[in-house]
Length: 163
Image (cartoon, rainbow, N blue to C red; front, side):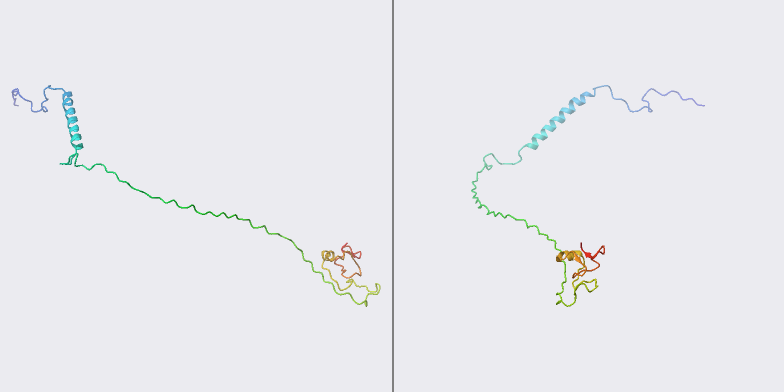
């Protein structure tokens, strides 16, 4: 085993970089840096806002000019208005009509019925379809033997139709 003697005093190679000496504090950097940034900013604003036109003077610049414009406006005549009044169409008139056909044969010359000798139900050559047709013809009531009598018109069979 070998023993090595302690090394001579000097910088330690295993320790990190040396720390700066405690000289100026951190606020001095702010005290110098911030005002210099503000001065540079203001110089940039002043230079940027300066007039870049070279060789022009205030007298050479064009001044304001005045222009006179005459405008003629024609007023149109008022339009002619025409009033139209619409009238409603009249309502249609509805009329109900009922048509009844009555067939009446000319009367015989007296030959035929001689006082009830016939026993027929027809009672002549006149025919009525129903009692409404009889009433429309003005022949109601019809008795047995009268022209137009029929058993279909006599409901109760007493010999008088359309009572």
